[in-house]
Length: 250
Image 1 (spheres, rainbow, N blue to C red):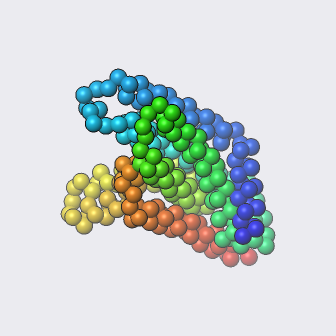
Image 2 (cartoon, helix red, strand yellow):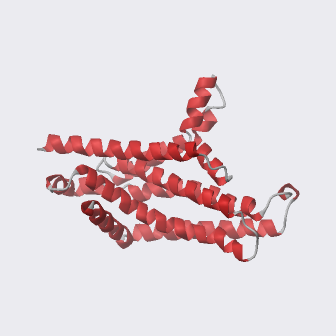
Image 3 (cartoon, one colour):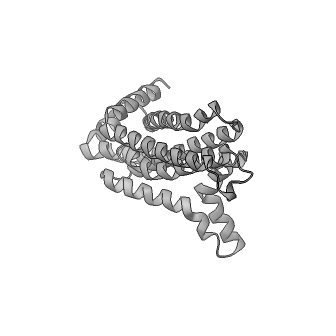
């Protein structure tokens, strides 16, 4: 466990020393701040279709919905260097020859990335929570939405972690990760056609359906379990991939 924490702390420091991480953080916060202001302005000048809908539904939930889309675009650029950079520079061999296990290495790097994403999540959360100063909020719905966003980000990071372990080219890792995330995001659209079994499968694997449920305040353990399965699957695939490579390199 000490090795995992040490690797995670090192990975987190490395991220915050990277200009790319600060640029991505600034872009995400700037875009969401602008969209937050626009949605708040629209709420203060209500349209007929806003009838019966409060600030939580229109502003807070709307912001979290857009945040999920923006993070889908940004996260691949954050995860693309986790292992591909190590492979490109050759330091992956040093990691393989070190006394730490592959499991500790993967978990440490993953937790370091999650630490950065938690910082991003906290900064995003300040926007909807700031509304509590002047409007009644459904804090349970916002809490469920933030939980959904955290699980979504953790799933993005796990998929990016695995893809990064497959290549020595960060750009290829970023593009591949985005492609997989995009397909999982819109797979529910494919469920509109075909048999009931086809619809059920594509609806289940969609990252969007479970996230929408949590944003709407409908907390269901099945939604949380789905994201936990995604995270565990891709983290274990990454461990298996690197462990196999380590054995073959001896």
